[in-house]
Length: 362
Image (cartoon, rainbow, N blue to C red; front, side, top):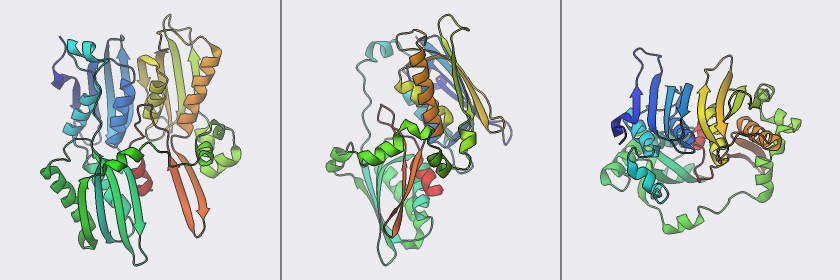
């Protein structure tokens, strides 16, 4: 009827220090599975050295060679395996019967409140602990008083869905007390007020700021490009092409671009939101700061991309997402400077993992 659940995801550690872990996923296929896998890999702070994946439309086989990022906390491989298995379709016949009606339940939101003395790096230290505990940050409210005290409100969810237990809550509070030390005045964890849920979908950006952050014209505005990074010239050398001559049933999508953290996730997220089917793919290792990705793809109806307008639209969309996975604006607000970092969200409602972790680290 399928393969045993323990064989759906297999993680093999390197034989020697410095060798990558090899992650193998073998399960029924679904549109967007590659995106879901890459998102978890990124969420655990892992860097994909190379990847191979193939599917016949019913069953898929994925192999990833991964390393931990230098700034990443310790990776719990057993938890990584559980998270990967959670996004894989069931290997039994019941999957095909119930796949249209089953919906994952959303995790409960908890409010973590702590008051402590302010110090450099405090926000990142707390964020790092939450990341190590596999707690996802939904939103944060930070207040610093004139007497250098900090009141921080973290709205979090638990990737392990265990935060309702006393043991999990005690572990979280203990690790936070350990990192905050004697500067901690109080630290509490409780279920968030239901009012929070009703405000989660309300946009916090004004239409003017949102347009500046997410407009596709950022690709062609040299003044903005120069302000973003001195390496923008290298980033702009991305090349996305489509070829219909090599397969009777699939379009070959070829991508050559500068490497960055989460690159494969950004590509897979874009293709998932466009309902594009991937039959075969190869993600090559980093060569002098650049990556190559070959994908054999089909449209949602199983047909090739033959319309030039559709080809151009997809190529432009991919270039924008690869060039600007994060959108950054720095502006003066009276006596203060405002740093605004935003990123696109999947149609499923999931945002890019570890953005707050990376921003506070920087």
